[in-house]
Amino acid sequence: MNLSSLWGPLGRALDAVRGYPRRAPLTLAYVGVLLVGHAWLGYGLSADRAATVLGHLSTNLDNLQDHPLSALLGSVLFFDGTLTDVASTEFVGTFITLGLGVCCFLAWAENRWGKARAVAVYLGGHVVATLLTAVVIAVALRRGWYPTEVRQALDYGVSYGAQTVLAIGTLALPRRGRLPWALFVLAWPLGGAEWDGPLPDFTTVGHLTAAALGFGLLAVPVFRRQRVRAALTA
Image (cartoon, rainbow, N blue to C red; front, side, top):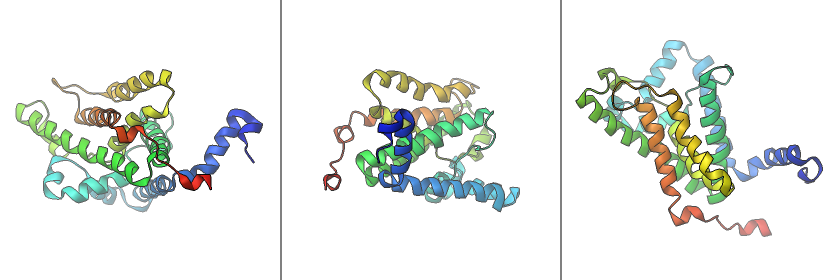
């Protein structure tokens, strides 16, 4: 039964939820991993042990020089945010990155282009934005724009990959909504930016870099075409 024909917007929402596992199975599995990881850190480990795990997975300069692969891949298996403190600004960030970025727009990308391209966009955005931000940090440290403690700063989570798919997901919107959405994607990281010199904090730099990568992919022809699903016509 098509619920959307019976209950309008509510029916369309229920249809979308019901069809989510079929349209985006990889995204659904990834969200499950993120939730399990979040619970493990918060409830399965002591605070000291959780800090040790995250410290090892952080994509700061020291870790990227010492164990770059495990830091880059491990950091994207956890999200930095809250699911319970709904009145906090931290929850707003979680809603944008995990809720909209991963649950919605990564699922949209998987359904539109398939698993391989969706992973390439998301993971590529995470890795490239992280590495480019590391270059900015290194330059800023030499010029005295960032404090030396930034080398060991805790930096992990899904937000750079999410920001990339939020940007490329502009294609999912009607034309009249694309410019406001693009402005939102660029503006929300700046809302909590801290400026100690000519540059904002490095996480803001990373989010803006990830957004630029996503918007840049909009010009690539392969990402402007939807994959052909012959199986759906059977």
